[in-house]
Length: 279
Image (tube, rainbow, N blue to C red; front, side, top):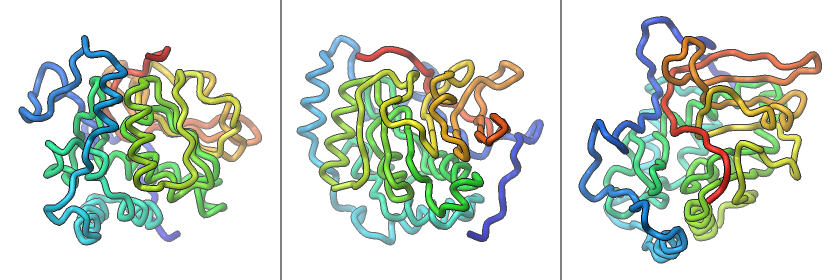
């Protein structure tokens, strides 16, 4: 793969180009009137039931490959250079993973609410994080991401993209309604090589460890030890964590070598908080 590696560290004073902005979900910006989150008092099983009943959005030309290719062209213009990642993004219909009320925004570079105060990440964030994974020495030598652990399944969109780049994907989600929603989406689209697990993502998923690739869609103060323990030699982990200066979040890229762990920093980002437990 001929690609120009991104700068491994955040340029001081430069605005991040790939923020996963979630501010609009609470306080701050108000999302579209249709983009209402599931009410806290609503029973979780009711949310899962409603998700299973949801009719996949159709029409408006969203089912055509040119719509997805236009998204890929924007990603390429914005600096994503890894062709396998761009090809995977072109293959996954993002509109199938969003609420029908938000379908017109499916191919915009924006995060969208999926319920329970969670979002589907911006396409640029998904592409950029997976590109970081692909730039790892192991993935470059293999030509694929190998065995992948994803923390935070959400609606299943990123898992679907990863499935086109991996030999197997294990995706862990702590919120049961979202776990079921993702299972519904991936089954309907017949996405291969994916195993979804309802569990505490902070613990990773030891039964299928070690993993060649680990990616997380939530950020805490630091990376949980379980993730590092489950990363294979030659593997790479990409996840958000608190910035070293204590302000905001930044992508942390970790490579496990025969000598130990090696870290570097990527772009500034903003993801939902990493939490323990299940519900």
